Image (spheres, rainbow, N blue to C red):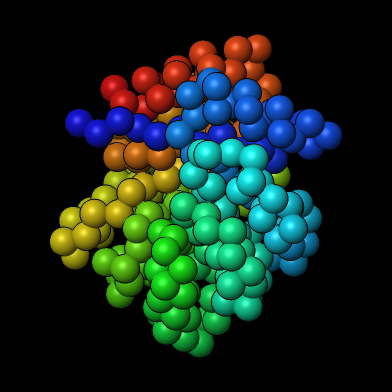
Length: 226
Ligand code: DX5
Ligand code: ZN
């Protein structure tokens, strides 16, 4: 039995008090800090970029979990890697459709050379089978439980089935990536995805809008582990 990790998304935090917001989840027992990078192109929203992501590394000892919702991730990867994040996630849909597996391999190589871990994210309508050729390369697979772009959306019910498909695909390939889920996670949905095999819970509103953040983190972790 491995403990489930909780990675609160700072997209739901008070940006005018980012340092104390991060301190609150660190004190509250968060395992990682989830940083949602959006470019206004791959997704409609525009959020945090390289300068802020780099400075975050200075104010916390929690591992940075950087979720890149950007087009042409290979171009910007080196800039994000400079702050030595623990985990960097790129989106499958952002890769060149003519040669996604080649680009995926390049991205993993760049990320690993920098000493970070590499993850691949799938939008809710992307077939899990796209990972057939690269499943063994990734340290983590992010199964999106909402369409990326905004916090506060409702959990898509099909997600646990998709997690089971990733578990199956990995098993057949002899791979064992972590499985992360992101979007609409609260203690109720955490139980569903945890039972399906997810190991890392991202939660924005589920943590930052809770009256007691430490209790919310613990509750999500316990629900997912049972
Ligand atoms: C969605 C982002 C999520 C989001 C999660 O595009 O990737 O990380 O901020 O927020 P909640 O937990 O509120 O759905
Ligand atoms: Zn995210």
